[in-house]
Length: 135
Image (cartoon, rainbow, N blue to C red; front, side):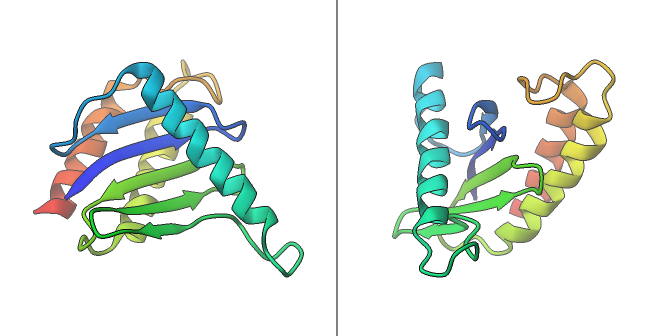
């Protein structure tokens, strides 16, 4: 089961968040704080690599209760998905989400780059994708 999706711009600002599982709803500020924390940990991890320039940051965090998978684009947009630890294929799901992002957000003439994503068609297609991958 997919619990949550976070999309952060290259500056670490939360531009999209949605919960899909039976997780406790947080305040808007808590979601922003979580997104900022993910961005900071990702940046720190990319600097901790013993081989200069070889790390792209955190890609996967696994615990007993959840799995967090990250996909970062070449432009610095980060997609984080939080799911059940046994959920297969999170990397493929993230690539599918990225395709939806490019098709329905970036090609939307009313969307301003790196701003909050407010696109009903993106929400609809995203919920369909996640429903297909959960069934």
